[in-house]
Amino acid sequence: MSYASVMDTQKRELWDRLENEAATSYRAFESFLNLPSGERTLLEAYKQHVGNPDAVKPSDTWSRWSNSFAWRERAVAYDDYLTSLRREAYERAIEEEAGRQAREVEKARYRSDELLTLSYERAMEMLEELDASTMRMSDVIQVARLHMDYLKAFPVQPESSREDEWTEEDDAEIERIAKRVRARRILEEGAQAPDEEDSESDGSDEDKEDFENPEDNPGQR
Image (cartoon, rainbow, N blue to C red; front, side):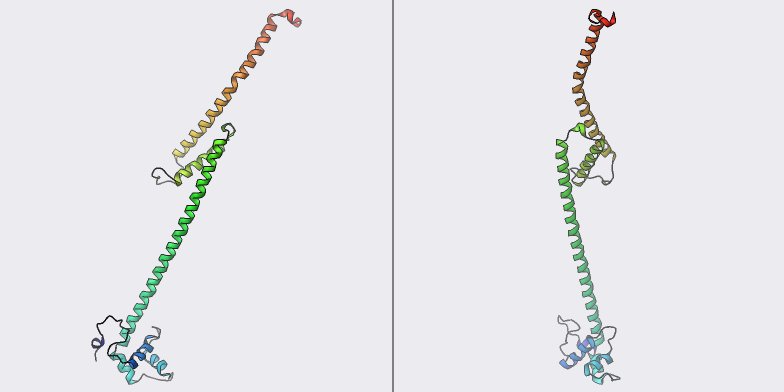
């Protein structure tokens, strides 16, 4: 009986029991199939199946079954099937791990954006309440940097391809804010200047009168 004559065309795997394969011969095949591929031999399967570790060769019946029902070919197909299952399981595990890591990264990014937003809002509130005349240049720079970081994290326009670098536009923005602070200081200082000038003017007039009226100032006679 040839190998081709025993392979049925029904939807079965090659290592399943064939239609013309007796239960006894199929149990013998299972003993052969269940051995590790590197240790699978007809003699080893026979020893384990009959419980005779001292056997030197399989029986003639086993040899005939092995050839008639293509044990070796069916066992190879079974090994290939297990290999494909392990590969699919490995790939599935990688995809699941990648998905888990992606979710963790997204969660961390969301938390970072949330903290950045809260920090920006708080800084803006403090800036509105702060007297500009008391601000140091380092404070201005820190506020400007926070503002730039916020715009980069939540852009209203397409981000630059070099978004992580400090750009000339960032320097210009800091300079613009610094100028506003300096201008506000100048305005506040200018508002106090007229009072000081009036005081100086009053004092000079009195000195002039004293100089022009020596009678009122005996010491100059």
